Image (tube, rainbow, N blue to C red):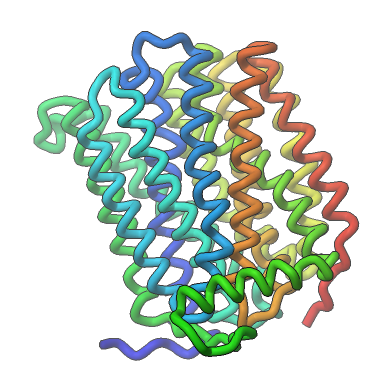
Length: 421
């Protein structure tokens, strides 16, 4: 078996960052692009656009609710057992199985397709949680901003490469020896799962977990100790006002970010935009996001992560206002460029900012709470957008996200800046 790389080494950092290269293929190809289009055009055929939006939002919310409840407990168990990599692989395999399961969904089977999709989304969230937690094992606090942004940037450029192949396969199935677009989509789902698994494997061989320092007695099974640790940390968090304020603000603004990611294609379809135009816009977002995220990390390391998060949130507020007035495919592409400039930066610097606030040897459980609130919030965003679409129309529904960005920024301003290395 391969020897784990030294923490801080290029091999350790690249092996960790490649996790993002794998799971981002699922985010872009399945969650953001192909599934929302298929759900509206095939799986939910016969339903109204508003009903399709509400159902898609519900399935996204279900997956977020499950991982929100489980995340902090799983994180505590992982810390007790030094099992972050094991949980990482477990969720990866679940995601691969969901990709395979989507190949069996047929026209009109929106319940089956939605449930399998929700399982895949849950697997992505769990995989991403332990990927986040491992950042404290691969580098030092003074490099969190740059390394975190590198991971996100690598995910963007890697996933878009696979996406370009997949999109061409669906558009020109005969070029790949496939009978039609339906056969191509089957290959796309399977290829996405294989890509996810392949790029997760280096972390299993070359990332070395820092041994945790259990705060709970060593008696009992790992599961028992994990639950005891969860209870102890929950009580401890009550006195950690700084962390709680950050988590509250993060819960709000990241929900807005994730809702834009998950529902952008659905929003565009409700405006009558063509699928090809929206796919092109998504590719533009990924390509722009690669250098922009790296730049965000560089600027965050020099000017402060929080300051750059503010920049991103201001831009997101502008995006909501712009989308409300948007009517053409060209405007949708302009919006995609703007989203690409800030999307990865806000996510990456939020992760590195939080990593500086927590004990390094207990990253599993603390990132469990981080992901719990991030995913619990994701119940609000898609649901808020779906309900707003039913009440005030699809176009105006995007304005509801302004509440999340503004409230999140206000809470973030109350957090004490962690001492920089």
